[in-house]
Image 1: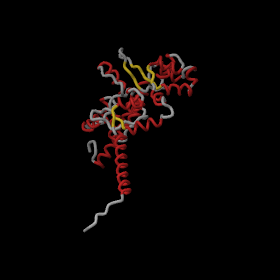
Image 2 (image 1 turned 180 degrees about the vertical axis):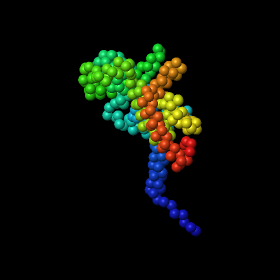
Image 3 (image 1 turned 60 degrees about the horizontal axis):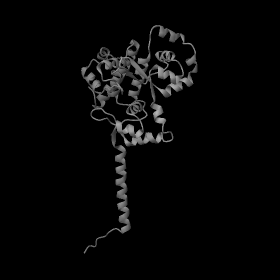
Image 4 (image 1 turned 135 degrees about the vertical axis):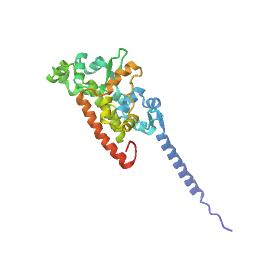
Length: 286
């Protein structure tokens, strides 16, 4: 008769312990990788949904793969990373994304009058981080409070001195660089969140007026691909048609030199995207 050999009790216990440890590790990994929506993620970080959206925009919090409908989702591992980095300063994250709306509030942070603040912003010395459209269909620009404080420390003369000749010339011509500087910032953030060549081209395509886009991308199939990959409007973009029409104007390049810059950048990005499609057979016309 063949005798069955069994492991000693202590060996069996160790083996069961190893299996339990593996199961626990897998469960922990699964929990860390679990995806949650914006409302839950914001609550876990102690932020409002608007503050979380701003943190994602600034690259402070990395969003996971979105839902089929495009809604943002976040992993527990990412939220744990953000909390660990801000562990010694619980209010640090909120201070990073704190914004003020309009010239009056922003001027108070700088310690200047609203008219001086507006001049500095219109002349491109201060860059908005977002916008709102009020009930009068006027654009209300949003600024990061931390950036305003840094500017006040770095450029005290600009808060007290006279305007430069260049600034006076721009103001005399009723110029306003706020839409352009905001677009540059917004596009830069979007490009920084993807390495996919077609997605990057879609970001640049979204800034061009329709006529310029058709000239830059004459192939309708490519325009369909770019439209499908276009990023959603910024958080807070209005839904009311009249206000949305005003906001849409902020998303498109205006001055000829700005349009030329984005068009040239798009054509360069498309060269790389087309090359990838030819070599891999992935995404986009070949």
